[in-house]
Length: 275
Length: 161
Ligand code: SF4
Ligand code: FES
Ligand code: FES
Image 1 (tube, each protein chain N blue to C red):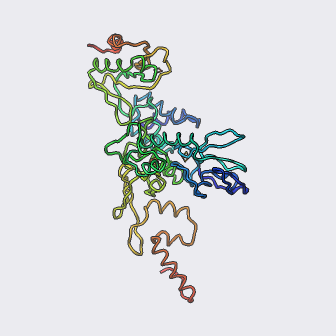
Image 2 (image 1 turned 180 degrees about the horizontal axis):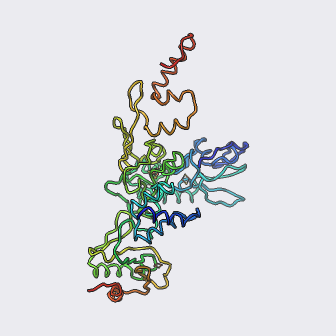
Image 3 (image 1 turned 30 degrees about the vertical axis):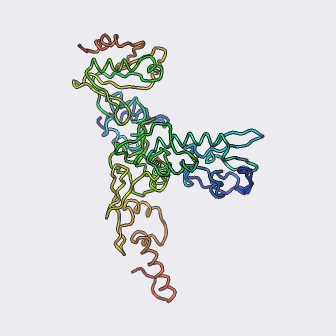
C-alpha cells in the first residue's frame, strides 16, 4: 500500500564522493533523481512502495571500508551513508542486466536507448519475439501496471499469468475485463510504454488488455468524451467538495472556464448560482 | 462445479493463510480441473478478483484449466528427472498413446487422448529426485522409469497396445 512519507530529519549522504542533503529515511534513488545523478531504474514508482524487482538501480554501499551492493530504490538515506554508482562491479552487473532486458523486451525503444546509454548495444541471450504479443514485445515484467491497478486503483483487472519464462501480464483468460475502469494508470506507470490504449468516440479501448472496452462519459458543456464512466462514479463517491457537481458534468477544460466565469460573476456581485 | 459443492469447499477453508490455494486444490481434486465458470463463481463468493485467482491457477502446475482424461499421467521434467531421461519417457508415451504434445501458451503441457482415457502433463520436480526419472499416474508414483516399463505401467490403467 501507499505509505504516507513523513520527512525525516535533515542529514547528509555521500554519492560518488560528493555530499548531498537528504531527509533521514528517504529513498536513496529519489535523492539521486532529485540531484540529477543518473541511476538506471525500471520498477521504481514514487506512488508505490519500492519493490526491488528490476535490479537495475544497484549501487555499492561503502561501510567501514567494505563495499556491498544494494538496490538504491530500497535503500534508505541515513546520516553518513556513502554510495558509489559506477564502480566496475556495478557496471558489470548492469551490463548483464541490460543484455537480459534486451532479450526480454527486444522491441522496446526505452530499453534499447537506456542500454545504449550504458554502452550495451547487443545481447548474447536469445531474443524473445512473439508474434501478436499484446504488449508488443516491450514488457519487462516489472509488475508496476499490476500493482498500480490493484494497489492504487483497487481494480485488480490485470495480473501476472503463468510462471517462469512463460510469465506474461494480462487479463484472466485473455478476455475483456469487467474489473477494468479504463483509468489508464497502467499506461502511465509502464516504464517501457508497452501498454496500448486508445479513445475511440464514446469508448476507451485497452488494446493490450484483451481489447477491454470502457464507456466514456461526455462533457455536458463541450460534448467531448473525457473520462471513463465507471471511474468518475467511483471517484465521485469518494470526493467531498462543492466542486463535485462540476467535476461530474464537465471536462477539466470546461470546468476551468466555468470556475473562472463564476469568480468574475462573484466579484461583480453577480449570481454565483450554477446555470 | 455446482454452487453447493463450492460453498462446502469454501466453508472448509476459513483460515486466511493458504486459503485460496486450499480451495483451488479441492476444486482441482474433485473435478480434475478448474473451470472458468467455477473460478468466476469463486471470485464472487470470496471477493477476490478473478485476475488474482487466474494468476494462482496458472502459476502452479498442480492446476489444470482444461478438462482431463480418466487417468492423468504427469511426467516430471525437473532438473534431476530431465538429466535422467525424462524427455525419452515423454517421447515414448507420445508414441504409445498416439498423441503429439505441444506446449500451450501457458507453458503447461497438457494433452488428452481422443478417447479421453489419458491426459499427459508435465511438472517440475515431485521432490522424489532420488528415484529419477519419475512419473505419476493418478497419484501413484513410478520411479526409475524407463521407456520399456511404460507399456506395463499403462496396462495397469486399461491401456491396450
Ligand atoms: S506492461 Fe509495463 S508496467 Fe506492466 S509489467 Fe510490463 S513493463 Fe511493467
Ligand atoms: S528500481 Fe530498484 S530494483 Fe527496480
Ligand atoms: S526432478 Fe523429478 S522428482 Fe525432482
